[in-house]
Amino acid sequence: MSTDPQSFLTALRLSDSFLPVGGYTASYGLEQYLNEDRIEDGDDLQALLAAYLRRVVGPCETVALANAHGASTAADLETLLAVDERLHAVTMPQEFRESSTKAGAKLCELLGETAAESGPEGGTDLESAFADTVASDDTPGHYPVVFGVVAERRGLSRLEACLAHAYSFITGLLGAAQRLGRFGHTEIQSVLEALGPTIAETCERHVDDEVTAMASFAPLAEIMGMRHERAGRRLFMS
Amino acid sequence: MGYRDVAKVGLGGPVGSGKTALVKRLVPELVDEGYDVGVIANDIMTQEDADVFRESFADLLPEDLVEGVETGACPHTGIREDPSMNLAAIDEFTERHPDLDVVLIESGGDNLAATFNPELADYFLFVISVAEGEDIPRKRGPGVTQADLLVVNKTDLAPHVDADLDVIEADAGEVRGDDPFVFTNCKDGSGVGSVLEHVEREVLFV
Ligand SMILES: Nc1nc2c(ncn2[C@@H]2O[C@H](COP(=O)(O)OP(=O)(O)OP(=O)(O)O)[C@@H](O)[C@H]2O)c(=O)[nH]1
Ligand SMILES: [Mg+2]
Image (cartoon, rainbow over all chains, first blue to last red; front, side, top):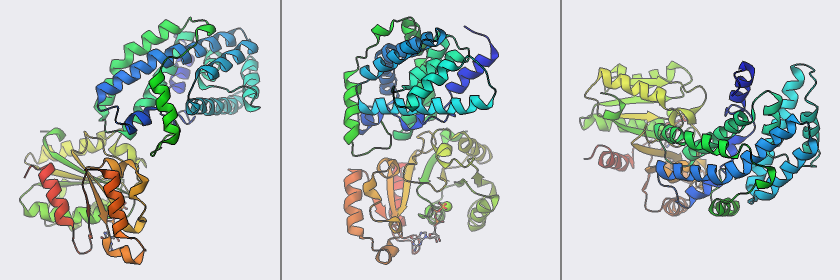
């Protein structure tokens, strides 16, 4: 683990809901679970989020992120685009893809603009080349892929980047749950605390996976994500 | 003594729907029945607003049981994600008044999405006004669907804004299923008795 203070600050920045990339608009199917009364209490919520970690965040997003991080280290745009394409292919519900690509584009834009102001440094060529490809719609630009690149370029290790991403995914969904259902703040924090080990395990398990291992198996979450498209109540984009 | 030892009733709803008007109606009734009542107003713009409450309840409540809580321009957050400052205010109430029975917490005026954190409010009223449009219930905002009691206020204005109370009633019944809703007119007090009955039955166990 890195102890470089600047990388640590980057990890905090990237996992903070203060980061304006629209994370608060995504529920990744959670709204539909609540619409259909499939989640009654904190235990249900915890079980569901643990399943998201094991079946989606780990085997799909973490694998994509870790490989994007590796491609960034190698300054290998071609591999990066292949990772992005594969994540697009394994993310079934249309709204999941949209939430992820919209946030990815925003993160590219945001860091492009703020980094440009903080000094003309070399070494971000790959980042800007990827950002250009995203901006011209030649690659979907999924959030975990962009995240992997910007985290690597700013000194986070692969595991740190995966942890920061998985943590922010979970806090994003916990926030959504709190806005949609009746969960107390203490209960939400207990769920977060209880999920800590699962977040760490999931990231450790998948951080070294090959890109070809990327796959999801979460049929119910995917069905919820698809039904959400026609839901009577939609406060979230996914 | 702390916030867990007192009944807490939240009042949420859009700006100007009549939350303050309802609190002003409920407090005298509750005091009349012998309850020790505290009142918190959220998202006040200045302490003047809390002073308005203090003034209107001058003969009913001790001054130190009326409090204003600023929520940093985030009314949702103060009652939902992070109610800690409201809970701190209630803790102070209970420290000073160990016999306190119930606290009414008025949320800052908001939209249809604001709900109360169940740790902050044991019972949650969502106040809408017929003047906001007769289609409000069928928009299924979380406030409208999740509140323990939906209060449809300003019935007196219905004819002036072309709002059909029958439509509102049918829609409210549909989106709330078995959960209750009441019509009120805080100007003349009609319907307030029914709100009071729900509150007493559900949180004060009368
Ligand atoms: N005609 C009529 N006017 C009402 C009624 N209830 C409240 N009002 C008026 O509506 C206006 C707003 O009422 P408030 O009680 O201040 O509304 P509020 O929900 O507390 O407003 P905020 O705290 O600013 O969100 C005031 O002028 C009230 O006198 C009612 O039942 N009928
Ligand atoms: Mg008010």
